[in-house]
Image (cartoon, rainbow, N blue to C red; front, top):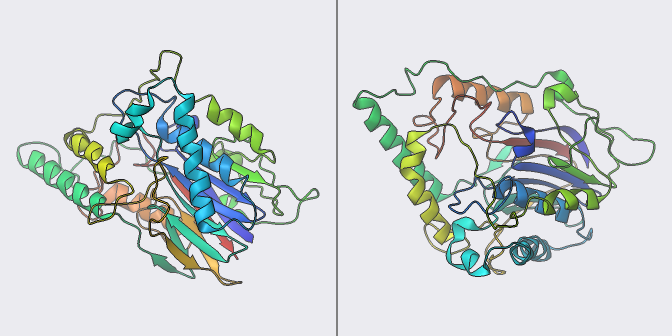
Length: 357
């Protein structure tokens, strides 16, 4: 594959809390999106989403080139399940309280099979045509949050249409952020200022040299053991209680939080509200959407941090900035379970990869 551009940035200033990740190997390209925690017990440090991202990014890097979709699914899912036995929490917690599980979504492109596999709600666009991935339960809870926000506004609160511009706009990548591949001397990807918590790459034939300060800490490492070390250090602390995540105040999200936890009851189940997510408990027969990729196709893989995905990174960033300006609470044009809040660059972590197969 020939990488055209890629970008991975967390919504918080501290990029070590970024729950998105990106990995490119000789046989695979994948975007991984760790699920925002709804935990009560706070078992994972610094968050379940970060731990899940690290584990899956690392594991994709070890997949055999010819691994099938089901082999990939079960290998990734077993890696999360194995982490439960390593934690100090009773495993019954993860069986009975699904919101305490490690959870992540991913979209994985296989060069050998010329397919992309949509494991959850990460996004894909092929030759400008996007495959819808929004979950029904997210639509429902986005509507409920919109209802709550508008009700609060009618009672003297602040609606997104009149909210003061308190949030910093997402940084739009400049031309130096559009990463063009070429051939490196040793056949291994290089990225200055690396932090493997954002991206791991293994024996790739591209050499990528983005603008480090614009993109923020994003890592490349030719050895998967580096990513493994980072992931294993983020498990539960000795007393079984990790650090609680600190989130800026969002009263509308607080209102729907009980339902967000209930949503986990539908993980990997069939039916109107069922959805796929890697959590250590996936169904090996769950229907996984598969997108064929032909040689020469231009492919975009992205996390749902880009609610209005476009064929280029700059276009997707402009749409994100427009949403922040026009609908910062994300309760009108794009009804989400969370919105832009003060102190964060965006409403979610975001990752974008564009390449030619």
